[in-house]
Every structure is written in structure tokens, then in C-alpha cells.
Image 1: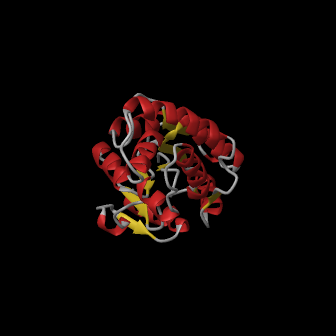
Image 2: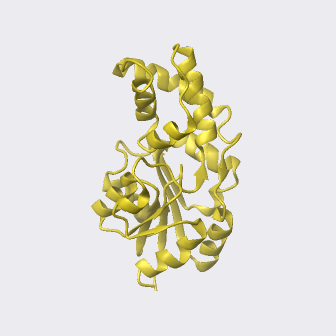
Length: 221
């Protein structure tokens, strides 16, 4: 029987990246004479790519900025964030242990995120998580972002195919999976404006260690 494929979101699902993202976004806001945002505000606007994060952070702290300004600020943000991408970011409880169990099961695993590709790989490398994943796709790997379902079908294909599901924390992850005709599990502790239980996932879990059993049930294994 073909082994299952687990595709994971990154920020808010595998790793609590809010502390390091907050440091960089507030550094950028301060540079432009804007007020700092709080961690609760940040957690509600992460997940749709770094440019969207910058745009939204500036919109909630004053006047909106132009596309040209976003591009300039994006470059500065990436440089600063890359200098401390894993300084305070840590895997959520149970992540490493569960990835070990899934690996022992023979599952194929990948990371599909709207976080820029370079920092995504750097973060996973620095946290020692990269070896668990046969494919890592961040923003820039393809010319489109989640919820485009081509990302899900593409990364599953790279991993060799098989019964696959999405594990994430937001409406974007639900839309991605639905577009690809795949089941989706959401964690309840992630980054989202609307509580995960209201986003229409096939299952919502409170602890990452529940991924294995819940995922296998949804895949009929």
C-alpha cells in the first residue's frame, strides 16, 4: 500500500515563529516612525506571505503604503529577519516526537508555506527539522501562493504521490486542501483571526501529537 503524505504549514503549525517575526516587523515599523504592534496583532496577520504581513502591519499603524514601498521594505525585512530567524522561534510541543513517529511509519512529509522560501529553509535547518521533510516549498518556489491548489498537488507529486492531507492553522490551509480535493487538519493553537474550529476543516486538534492518528483516520488507513 502507498505510504501516506503529510503536508505541513510552517508558521503557527510546526513552529512558533511569532517572537522573531515580531522583532523584525517592529524594527521595520520603528524605522518608519510607526508604533510597534503586539504579539496578538501579529498572530492575526501572519500566513499570507511576508509582503502581505508588511502591508497589513503598516495599514494598522497608520497610512497604507504603496506597492513600491512594500518592495523596498520587504528587502530590508528579509535581511533583518535572516539574522535571527531562529533566535526565539521553537517547534511546538510534540512536533519533533511526532515527526519521528511519522518517519518511522514510512510517511512522506513536506512543508508548504507562504513564508519566503529562503527563510523557511534556514529556519528548519537551524532548528534541526529539515531532515524530516522530503520537500520544502516556500514563497518563491512557484509563482503563486497558497491557497492555490497547484502548490499542494505539486509538492505531493514531488514526494512521490499517495494519499495526502494538509495540516495547518488557517483558512488559507483549508482553501488549499479543498481546492486540491484533499482532507485537512487544523491545529487550534496557530495563527488565525477566526478560531480554527470555525474554518471548516475535517478535524481540529489541540496538540500536534494528535496529527498521526487523526491524519490516518481521515485518509482511511
